[in-house]
Length: 468
Image (tube, rainbow, N blue to C red; front, side, top):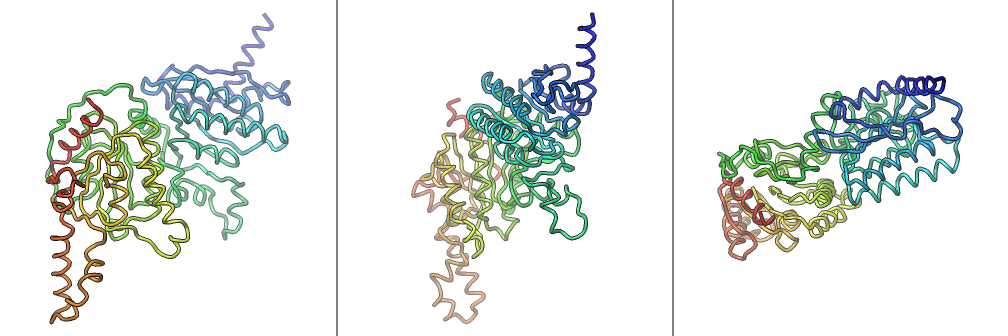
């Protein structure tokens, strides 16, 4: 009787010490679906301390919108969610179970950092955690959620995740925030300088933001529709639906015309805004879309945008999602600093990602496809299976301004009105040399279509390439 009472008291104390994180988990998983594992796990140094049982991390399995997942959640209410040997081992067991069962892994991070007092044992445990995450990444999706503090070693761990959600109140840094922010005048809020807004604008580590548990639940459920779909579900949006699109259509306009019910979710939307990446469905089939945005950087594409697209395409390849590119770019925007920071390496990274991806690839040239942006994002030689061009497309090695400077210098010099002459020569180059019909005649473009017909053509191409 006494032992039963002690057991009940221990369970109650564990639940009381993790009430906040349990409420958080309840908000993102299906009601009543969570089954906890390793409830009483405890490191050697805490064997007599009931409040440390559970090791500052909750592990188990559940469902999200009916999709099975394994999940671990660091619990800042116990040991500040700090990373120790037993804490890491508990996470390792959870990840191995996810890989063995083929379920997605969801990690919730909220930790003050490592337990340095455990010495090298803790370092070995962290290395084991990283190795297990790497091994699991080959077979299962990993979604990381930065709920609070993600400081120290675990900030590196999330870079191994496929998709990262970050609370707008969260903080992420490899070193202690007070050290990183020590050279900033005044007393900045850590989440202002090391939070989502800072990370999302300067890197593509944080892919999605969330304001509340409810907001996270909605976005997480939407993401799971794309990466966990075992079968194609019919929808009521006609695959032959055509739209009214003008020559100046925005990325949003084209997406609305292309995607089922005009819906998509954007990946890393605040980083390298000249290249935009989306998950969507076309004719009920989940796809990834990479679009260059002509409204940013005067219509040019940055090397950072190439890097962002490359990492996104690697994820599409891992989840076996077809790639669709929407190309409207005057070429690569570069400068001396960009070149020295690896512009050519980023371009190579993108081309390697596309060349190596074993997924169906469809290119749609919606406007300009100039220079390396054509080669990387629309070329048959790089690996695109099917390519389309809008009837107003411009496809060429250089843009019309550069072409006139290269080929028509004498004509401008000898003209009575150089400005008028330049405009006429630029139009001549676009109409004659960069006309999509010339490219199609050489077999580099499969068809030239009106903009409004993008959905029927792409929907048909996806079915053909998937053999459906």
